[in-house]
Amino acid sequence: MAKRIYFQEVGLRDGIQVEAALVPTERKIKWITELLGSGIDQIQLGAFVRADKVPQMADTEELFRHFQGQGGKPGAAELSALVLNEKGLERGLDCGVEVFCMGSSASDTHSRENTGMGADEAADRVAVMIKETLKAGKKVRASVQSSFGCGYEGPISEEKVLAIVKKYLDAGARNVGLSDTAGHANPVQVGRMFTAISKMAPEAELSCHFHNAYAMALTNCCFALAAGVTYFETSIGGLGGCPFIERPSGNVCTEDLVHTFQRMGIRKDVKLEAIIGVARDAAAFFGRELPGVIMKNGSIVDFKGSLGNK
Image (cartoon, rainbow, N blue to C red; front, side):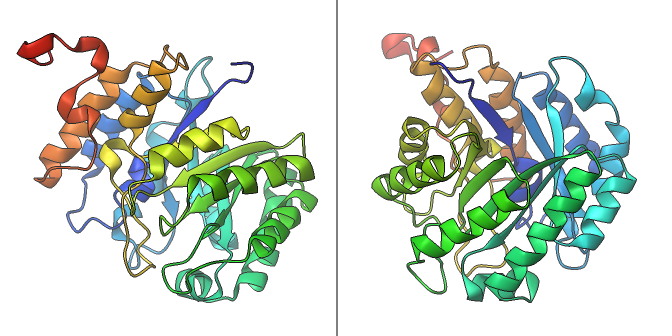
């Protein structure tokens, strides 16, 4: 494949934000350290949001200070954070974040639940934040939430989604993505929408974020790949879900997507077993079976016939 594919781990943010059991900072540091050794490209350490709203993110500053400088080493994963508003951006700049993930929803209802603003107002605000972040010399990943459908409103106008993408591009963003917040995306829709963005901005880097509410996340990733997407957001064990929608569902599973792509000859440099180890530890911590398949069955490369896996 001509273009390099990038894996962006969001388990430490999107993955755990809806979990009732708070993950201690020490356990997060252990997971992040192991993920840094796996060869994935970016780890989202947390989000600069109100701790009373999303308690799992209360130690985001502490995590960035602990890993300060490690994301800048040659070959090391980038360390990113989600910001929802100007205050979050300010907090991130203060503790040395280099990559800022931000976005707004194409759904008015979801946008108001998440930010207290309608979709148009929230997108305008993100456009201003994009300019401020780039002016500060930092990287931006800008995405449109509920791009393929909304848990409150149902179908979302594709024209509305593409208009928000254009707003991000006009503000200077060059890494733009579509997020399937409610898990409503289907493969044909995915291919069509990302192809439309490529025609709109051939130079843009495209990213995707899929949830697996209706068992289509892996397939959607493959169609996104065929449509030119190079950045894939995933979560260990398939953890995750937006706390501001009615039926939160897990993200596409990191180890499952890495395994799928490696079977296709893509990114064989990523250490799958290291990611599986973190996913299994997360399952043990939360005390339940997680959605991921490869963490249970192991890689097909390890298959030993009737005796099962290693």
